[in-house]
Amino acid sequence: MSPPPIVGATKPHHIPDALAALDLRLTDDEVRELEEPYTVRGISGH
Image 1: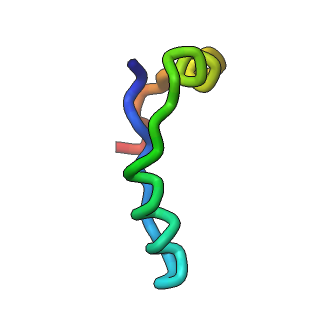
Image 2: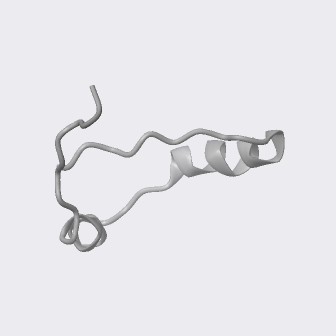
């Protein structure tokens, strides 16, 4: 599994949707579809 993105709420009204996403469950097929185009990149600028 690829590492998850860092997610943050930048405005208070974003918090309810961010919390609701905790209950979201993806099927194995959905995860594969989302991960397929993902390319791991090294950290730059440090």
